Length: 115
Image: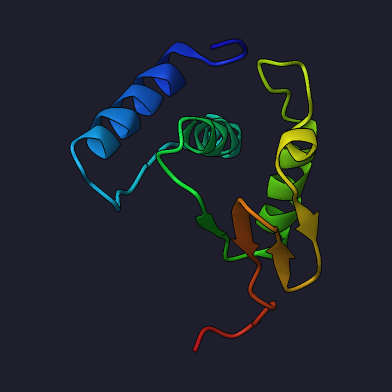
C-alpha cells in the first residue's frame, strides 16, 4: 500500500481481519496528526473495491473535520492512479455528502452549545 505508514497498515489489517470475521462495527482510536482521515479514506476505498461494503457512512462532528475529509477524498489517488471520485461518485454539500453508489459523509450543522 503506497503512502501508508506502518502503523496505518497494521490498523488496516486489523480492520480487514475483523470484517473477514463478520464484525460490522468497530472503533479506531489514533492520536492527533497520525493520519486518521487518510487511513479512513484508504480503508473505505479498499472495502468498496473488495465488495466487502456497498455503502459506508462516514460521520464527523465538526465542519473543520468535514472539510478535511472532503479534501482527503478529493486528493486520494487509487492504485489505478485515478482520484477517488473518478472511480466512485462523491459530491459534497453543507449538510451531507451524497453519492450514488458508495460513501455517505454526514456533516452535522454546527451547534456551539452541546445539547
